[in-house]
Length: 391
Image 1 (cartoon, rainbow, N blue to C red):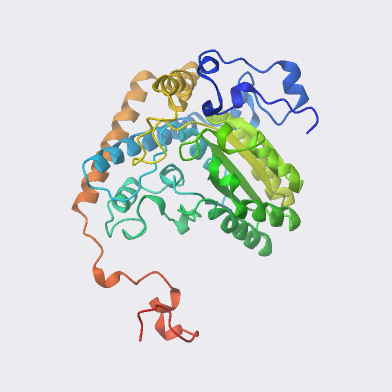
Image 2: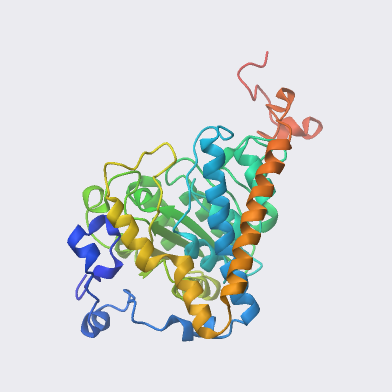
């Protein structure tokens, strides 16, 4: 692409050398002018219309949601280490501003679908800690009745169509939601989240092709935390930035930071507005970072240094940055911040107690909620066996 200059600050830490991590250089004004698709840390996103109109109460609410996600994830990690949670556990610690910022600009007919790192999105749309923690514990009171676990939170009543364990498997599903919105002439969009590793999967490109061809209101959001499952982006993906792959389908794209919630809100609002007004798709790459391994089962000892993680925490932690901004704006006090933090910890601890006390699903319910016709046999119209073990 002529005139494309990738900002070093926008590269995931996984693509930077240790030397660059310790002394990142900012993009120059000329570079920013050459490619407006690349945002810079020097931009004042707080003054953008979508952010300047925020009330003090709403700003506090956004900060509170981010803290709740952080404390929920930390408590779930503890529960996993204590043996209460089986299977996988993909933590969202470090990426909170992406989910909270994105969800905060959505309207009544906007929908969300994501991958298996889905706890942050679930809490951001308004799911409560009890139903989420109980699902992690595999309990009947969980949001998916204890059958989904960490990777499969769902809340259709909140337009949240779940986490999905198959890498990039959600990309054609998000496309289908966008197709339905257009078909029923609703002014809405579907935000389809994915990790950087999912951008190398075939279904993603098939989805981009149809999104452009049929002009569907889908916004593909690449949460690029730099390492896919455990390999730095520079070793698993050719070409940068990843969002530029949308050029092949004449789809608008942009790259932004994920540690500033004001920036996330502005970038996602632009894409959602485009979807609402013209049914046009977008690809947004949000450069973020995860503090923990790909999952709890990933020891995270071989592909990045502790110094790298600490450097990000020190300079770009989304909670600390937003807290500092709110303190500067006079919206938040240190006392209020401590109160919010304590409330989130108490809520997370209470959710663990709720999950522990909840019953497991009854074995007789194993085949429930798989096919609609098995749950409504009197309305079944298909023939033949639905399950192989049926006579």
